[in-house]
Image (cartoon, rainbow, N blue to C red; front, top):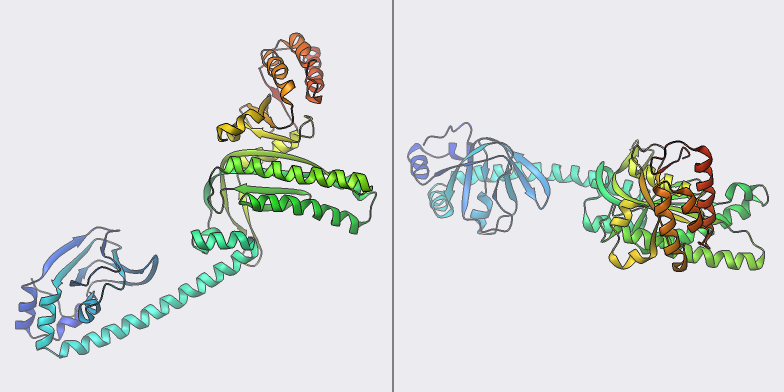
Length: 421
């Protein structure tokens, strides 16, 4: 086996007979793209001379350098008898000559000139590595600065613990629970109280919602006027995101109900709450430019959560939950869930069942479930009789619906179509 001294300056300092002696011990090895053939921390038992191809040098998960044909890899560990200080991975198909440590050190002992070449080689590697590390440090500092602007300190710490900060700025797909809160009555209150009192009351309500979201490891993706969009399982993974979203809603409602009672007793302003919860795949990432951007979530499943919240303005319940979310709930939470209708919401082609949580008392559930089954089969007159047995306001609401559909006549598709957002 012959090597071109121009491609291997390290071996170029050796006399031909010594090179032949060294090459007599060499083993030709080939590596596929992506194959790691030196691992950080392993014993330094050999040295590699790359004859063709390209490799990358990794410190942990960070690339600190690349190298190609003519380069020498692994020599410092052999010389210092220390473990491998970095990992080496093939970026392309690579051919390299592998020489065991004992054979290499034997040649070095008889030829001091090679040590000078090694010195220059290492100086170049150190300079290159320092440059790459400086660039990486700048990138990480920039990513962390952007991270500080778009997430809370609690989420930032979790992101830095679980993933690279720059990953948060890339568009990713996530299976998440989406919770859309709406604080009701803000616009009408604006006509009656001062701006200072209005914002103070609004922020008091938001503080309770924010605390519940943080408690259940959610992330506030956006404030939309007096509405709050929260997501669970993004950007930090959590267990049971659907359950976390439902529990978050429950805790927020308890706190806001307490606030409402106290405000009512003292004659102070208070707001009502509506919510929609969905589960599905969303896109998350930074939207905008480097100087002006938001970390947000996008997708049809986000829109559905907003549509479900909007329906609470019509159905006399405070939260409406999608079927995909209900399917993800643990068994012990299901007794508190009841299907209230089957609908087609604006912007969605397929109809779906919608559910309420905790709004309808157990004493009404059996009557309601029987009535709803008759209603969905188009037997509106019979359904009306059973809805009349439901004390909760939703019984009267659905009786009105039955009367509306009976008056309209026509074919009944088995679901109700909503044209509102």
